[in-house]
Image (cartoon, rainbow, N blue to C red):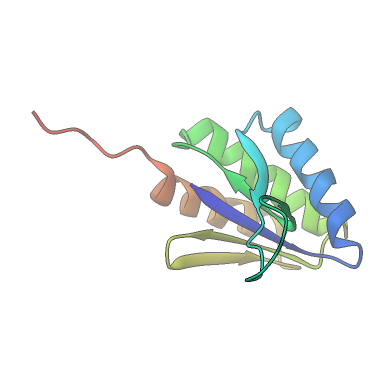
Amino acid sequence: MFHLTVDAPNAASATNMLLDELVRGARADARHAPAELPDGAKSGAGLALTELLLNGAVPAAVAAAIASVVTAFVQRGSARKIVLRSGDESITVQGADAATQRELVAEWLRRHGTAPEVED
């Protein structure tokens, strides 16, 4: 599972746009992350406004599509940066060369998103 955090002037709107692009354009299994509620909160559940989750293993073709969507999203100014996290590791996408970023993000997703091999 991957966490994507969006840093944008109107972060909630930008996060919704990115979610739509990931689901429709990259065909990724993405959704809003559940919000962590403060102690004593009366409500039982909420959604994080600026964080998305990518579920499951990410095949190479999907990793490339996600990398393209995320890189294009930042390049056209829809977000200042997007941080992808898996466990303790992360990669930040922001205003660099689009082709280089796309390759780096795709490789990072492939490295962290493959299903573990089952040994017999």
